[in-house]
Figure 1 (cartoon, rainbow, N blue to C red):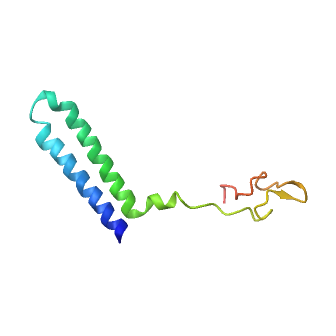
Figure 2 (spheres, rainbow, N blue to C red):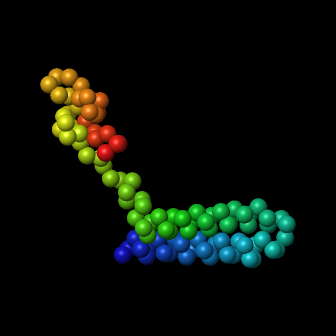
Figure 3 (spheres, one colour):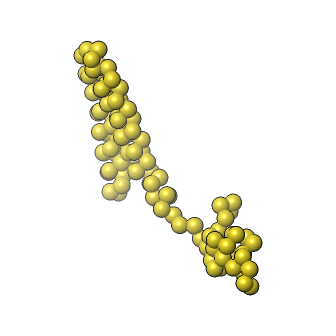
Length: 95
């Protein structure tokens, strides 16, 4: 629930930053063109971060891969390099 609140908060702040940059800063003068674009970019990034946090995408990056079942994570079978994982002891990515 806390992740959902943080995600929606970041998304809401991103929407506010984007709208302020688009409708307030951009029409002021030609001097504020680049800062307005930077503000819009920051708003879009905040929206994307909010969605990622609320959906839990950042949690999936922390998942550890399991050990190789053939060598049981040791990297060697009978004194030789494991043919399945190449001696790393980690399950290959194709599984």
